[in-house]
Amino acid sequence: MSRFREELRVIPKTAKVIACLAYVVLATLINLGIRFSGDPQTGALPPAGKLALTFLVPLLLVALVLMIGYVYGDAKRRGMRYIMWTLLATFVPDAIGIVLYFILRDPLPKRCAACGEMVLAKFVFCPHCGASTQPTCPQCGKPVEPTWANCPYCGDKLPRQTANAA
Image 1: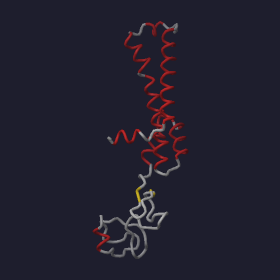
Image 2: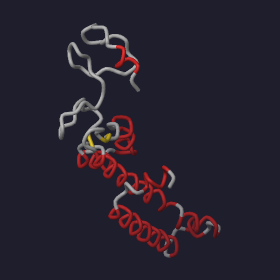
Image 3: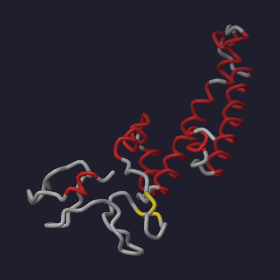
Image 4: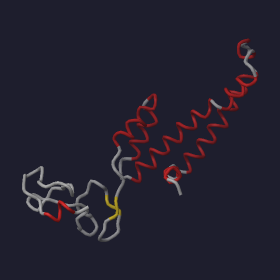
């Protein structure tokens, strides 16, 4: 399965149903508006323009609803405040809330090597079993990157196995 399809599975079914309903309702309203409009300019549209207006414009609303659904599902799986992010994505105009979500979202949780439970990426120790989820400085206990030679917090020299671990 492709990564894109995996990410589409994050969108809740409710959002997909709302998107379909919104498409049908908006397409119907636009079609009725074109047919019964008293405006001579609307009647002068070529048939291809009427079709595009009726069926392509509602796709923008569908895309917006699906993006809001994705924000909800993705924030929930990342352990973030999913209701807050969904409200921001919904009510901040011009899709700025959605853009902010993608800029500020947390990394995906990772599986603890000791117990197999999902652990937020920001945790240094597993809250279920207490095992270390990433290398730490032996002096101050702060998280360090495997490639670092010195701790950036206390300046202590890191052991060779921590610096070479991947």
